[in-house]
Amino acid sequence: SLAKQRLSNIEREKCLLFLRKAIKDLEITGGEYSIGYKEMIIDDELVRLASENLKLKKSDGKVDFEKGVKIVSENGKVEYHISPESVIDAHIEDLRMEVAHFLFDKKE
Image (cartoon, rainbow, N blue to C red; front, side, top):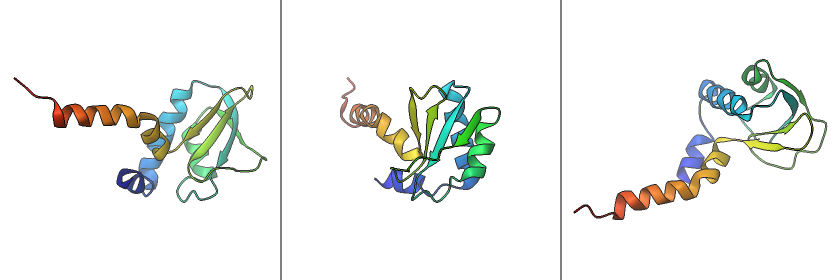
């Protein structure tokens, strides 16, 4: 939870780099985006800068999440939620296993 708290307060430039990489990894050509209703760093300008050549337009739909940005692919079939917190949540089990191995594996 401390890592999530620190990540939610990252600098704007670092957030831009994170968002740019995350959007590039999606391998989509366009779609719609929404920004979380409690998001303090990500705004329309940051999404525009991060999406570069990707054709994203702001969604008119109701925002139902707090942090990060949600992108729905152009065909509407795939939805991505991008935030530093969601990355931690997606990889939490891997992180727990790494920490457990580091702390408890005995070397002979």
